[in-house]
Structures are given as structure tokens and as C-alpha cells.
Image 1 (cartoon, rainbow, N blue to C red):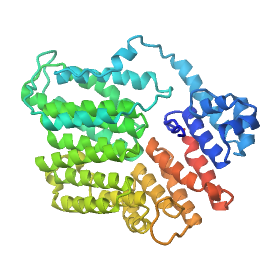
Image 2: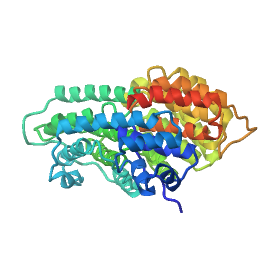
Image 3: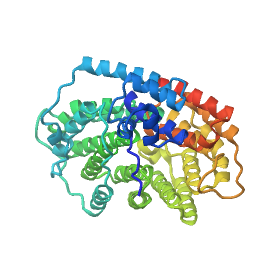
Image 4: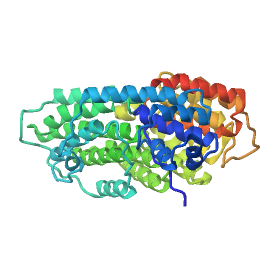
Length: 474
């Protein structure tokens, strides 16, 4: 069986973007790593290592790749950015931390305050390895087991704590204000935009508060806010293709939500975990997590959260190729959302409106190859995505893909390359400041679908626009 290509985080550094572009252009030219190496006089292993960002290319190699792959200087321009990043890193002079690996692990202690204290180790991981490729290390069992424990165990945790300075409601209110700001940044520009800032805030501000002195009522409020921040950290890491680190934050968030007794937030976290499993192509785990979130949301009376979890079940069924189950899950999602009153819902789920449900319909239809449903939902989704660059890019890429050949496709097959290129080109300016690996992956999926039509002028214009708006921002 062929080995699955290594996951990259191409918007994290020019070096990883170089590797992602090398993989793309080599595929476009239909060359194996060995054949490309023969042309450029590099070993197949060197091509592989550069493609997976394990090795940094030389300037001479960038020129050779440009000639061999006929890219009009793409790789040399990317090499200049790599060199600029390397100079900046040398100037920063980041020193190694001998305790780094030990501090990265989670502590499954009974104290929520001590558990969240390991955020410091996670933050150091994010900072120290910013320029190093980390394998995903995403494990399905690590997701499902904590979710099951969270649902089954009772909650009799004493949330009070006696430690440092006294913590009051005003400091919790500041944490919620920061939650809103971080969530807004993520919705607009993707997980990489404010991820390190969020993690640093948790390390320098939230962890000392958790180690302070507070009564049980304040403690529960504190744990809820910290859980939401951990959830955002997990979502941002997953959106930045740091899957293993994101999973650790989700598990921490789930534990804190349980300690706080906030079941609605716990259900929302389970939904985020389901989305991560979906993005990694794991429909079974995505379905189990979404079902657990749906049951919890219904039990605690959050129709909006239940609707989102139902929509995520539809995504999982669509990814698995089950149109009947997908339709039923979407029917339930519509009913749940019709019952919701946003004024009674937590603010973190208020983004899940009819327009977001339409986006979920669109993505599920795409997975099933139902192009007519994609075309039906696309105008609503794109119209409601103003100033939300990630959703605009994801929706436009999904619509563009619907005009191109797909493995799963129902009805009469009508390929419209020019239309696909126009839809994608219109969305590329929105990707200029985007820091979402999911968004770039969606764009690149369409670029791969366009490979058979690479001689068409419209495809060549899309490639030029991609380099102008996306490649130039790395």
C-alpha cells in the first residue's frame, strides 16, 4: 500500500509552503520523485526530504526545480522567503529547553488547576517548534475515550482553590472578552493568525489565575472560561495542521468543561473534535464524537449545539458515502435549529445560523457528489461570508470543485473548467491574509482537479493569481 503523504502546515512557514508547492507541481507534471531527481540531478531521497520540509533546499536547487517543472520562477521566489525566515530565526537566537519534551505531556491529575498548568508546556511546544515539521500524532482512541468518560462520570468536583492571589468575577469577565476576540480572529483569518498569542495569554495570565484563591462558584466560572480558551486553542491548532497538539488542547478543554459542570460547552467541544476527525478523513470517529455531542446538547437544552452536532453527523455520513443517513441527520439539524432561540444560547454557538447550516449542507453534498445541491446552497453561503475569509475560501473551493470531474458524482456530468477557474480566482484575494491550512488544502484540492486541463488559459490564469495572492503572503 502506498504511504500517505506527510501532512504539512504550508501557511506556517515558507519552507513548508515550498514543500507543498513542490508536491503540487511534481504531480502536475506527472513525475515521480525519482524521475524528477534524475532531471535535476538530485537524489530521490533529497526530493522527498525537501517535499516533506525535512531538508531546506539550496538556491541552486530552487533554480533547477524551476527549470525542470517549468514554473516561471516559483521556487526561486519561495527560496528567497525561506532565506529571509532563516535569517530572522538566527537573529531571534531561540535557545533549546532541556525540559521541553517532559513538559509537553499532559498530566491527568484530579486538580483542574494543575491540569491546565500544562498549558505552559504546550505553549513552549508551539513556540520552540514553529519552524520544525511535527507529524500529526492524532490518535482516534485518545479522542473517543475522554469523550466517553466525560459523558459517563458524574460531576461532584469542588471547584474552589486555595493558592496565590484572590481571583474575582472581573478577571473571569476579562477572560471571556479575550475569548470573543480570539474567536473573531479565527473566524476571519484562520487558526494561525492568533494561535500563538492565545497560547501565550493562557500561559502568562490564565494559568496563574487557576493557581490562585477562589470559591467554588468563581472556580466553576473560571474553569468554563479556561475550557473555552483551550477549545479555541485546539481549533486553531487543528486549523493550522498541528493535529496532535490540537487534540491535546481539546482533551484539556473537555476536562475543564466537566469540572465546571458546563455540559453545553462540553457538547460544543465534542463537535469541534468531530470536525477535526472529519478533516483527517476519519468518518467513524467523527460520527461517534458528533453523536456524543448531540446527546449531551439535547440533554442540557442547547438546540443550536444539537443542530451543529447533527450537521456534523451528516458530514461524517457524507464522507462515508451514505446519502440516506446524511439526509436524515440534516433533517434533524433543521428541526433542532428551528427550535433554537439565540438569546438563550451561549455566545460561542451563536455563529451557527441558517447560513452556517447551508454551508454544512453544501459540504455534505460535495462529499456525496450531489453537485446540484452544492449549486443550490452556494449563493447563500458565499453571500453570508463577507469578511469571513476562511468560510469564503472553503465554500468557493467546494463550489469550484463541483464543476470538475469527481469520483463521487450523481446526475449528468457537466464539466465547466472556465466556471471552476472563475469561482476559484474570485476567492483567491480572500486567501491573501488567510492562515488556515484547511483553506489552503481546499484550494490545492481544486488545483489538483485542474491538472488534466493545465494547458487551458483559464487554468494558467488561476495559477498566476494563486502565486500573486497566496504564494506572496507566506
